[in-house]
Image (cartoon, rainbow, N blue to C red):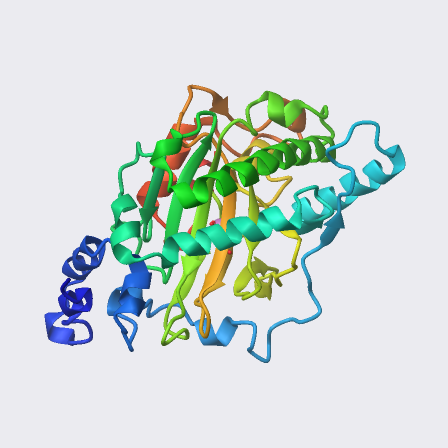
Length: 377
Ligand code: OGA
Ligand code: NI
């Protein structure tokens, strides 16, 4: 097999730089960023470099970064059980409400997903990306209708800059893929994990509904927990991590995300105009509010912007579970919840469908602006 980096040889030679050609050459390798690393790139190709992003200045190691601010950690023991302690539940709801209103991000512990299942899914995700390129490239695709696929940069041809990250995508609900579509070595582990995630998602939507002053089942009844897809991200070690990002600044295109990260670190959330680290917590899960929940809560809950620094010494793996009906868009309309708007508190967004919202988000790519602006009234 020819060295794919040879196709990217013009990188850095200013007069010959052709971005479209470089993107295509990279995409044609079907081996992702990991493929570049396997072939020993010593310099970050230009398509990954954003001249406007001052990574060093605002990263957590900068002297100005706030060390005293930490995203909340919430103990949700018993959340999935019935008949739990009413007092403890009230306390949980208060904490979730505060975190969702101020940070849009929190970590949960005692959430009911066994730590071995979490470790197994992270290991499986890593296995997928580290298997020989011939094996993983069989799954490489940008086909929107595929439920199982491997891609690097879903927005490769749309966004202003590419990220140092590859992704294995699997749509889980409402309709899971045929088992044969999934890599044998990973499918049982992934399906097992997704069952726990689905259950936890339903329980979290219960807490979030109550935190909004609505009936416990409200958010599930309007379909928030119906769609689920899982993104297994892999951030290869980067030779020049100060020049690129693992994931550009963005907010998520869903109701909520349940994120499992390994111990490497690098995830940061933008809070009061500063980047704050989301430190790895073994056994914990990161929960964040997505754009659609911000929209239907009429800005009560915040879909915060976040990013991932490029991994440096070791590769990083994360498994992000997205609650939205990406694979089966329905005609269901989402707008600010009637119970949350009034004369003094008018709707801030127009109604939209999941399909319209996602088309807008994906067309735009991770360009540093919020997709929600498009739906403001
Ligand atoms: C995402 C995301 C963070 C991570 O998938 O939207 O922000 O740690 N992932 O991989
Ligand atoms: Ni995200």
